Length: 130
View 1 (tube, rainbow, N blue to C red):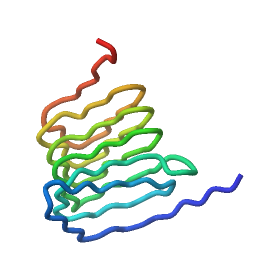
View 2: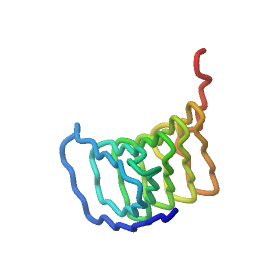
View 3: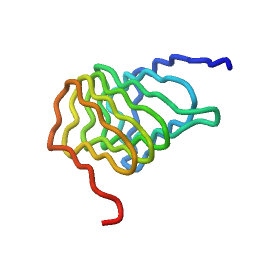
């Protein structure tokens, strides 16, 4: 089976609408350096498989980032101003950067791995069905 991984650098994206949502649904790897993104970032699996998103130094995302399905979020730098959440079978890897404002929230069968960075409040892992 043959796999293709594409790297995409997105720079200097500015969204002013408070209700804007940036939805990522692909089976590639995306490398983000977004400045002042005002709107949620939602990451889903693509047709052919999981999406991997790399958020790097210089990114500022307001309000939050969520990842679901089997997708992966790698926070290597930058700042999310209202937390990060994972659901389904998603994975969050925090290597650096700042998760400010709210918690890192992990629900379902998702996983959070924290290797570095700064967490603004804490970590929540609620039990489903309670």
